[in-house]
Length: 129
Image 1 (tube, helix red, strand yellow):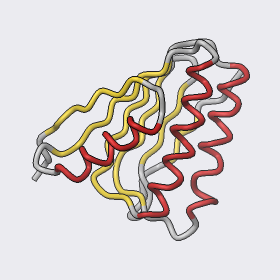
Image 2 (cartoon, helix red, strand yellow; image 1 turned 135 degrees about the horizontal axis):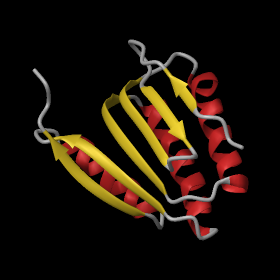
Image 3 (spheres, helix red, strand yellow; image 1 turned 180 degrees about the vertical axis):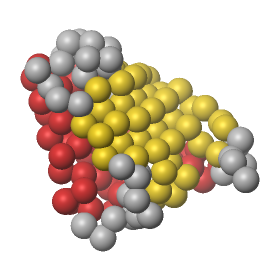
Image 4 (cartoon, rainbow, N blue to C red; image 1 turned 135 degrees about the vertical axis):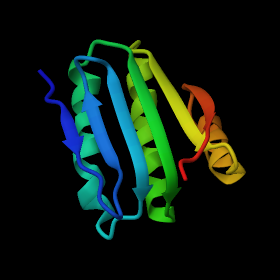
């Protein structure tokens, strides 16, 4: 059994919710932690457990309105891990949300999509004021 992972949002880290039973991952907010490895290691470890034990389709929801270069590099590791899971026959769908007025975040999502063989859905949203 894979435990649900929930990490509360802080000023420099996103909210993270990963639930194997529901086949659901959500990462929302800003990502520029001072200890990038320390923050993302439990997330990557959860994915490794899911790769070995998970059974459901995974819907992955990225709702990031800002992230630094270090985060973008670790997200690539995240997507490569998802690609491994997908190649095992466990369907992965990535919903890449971006503020409707932020082409840069859309472009980054499209770049990630070009680097891995996983279905991405690019979804614009209206930013809250």
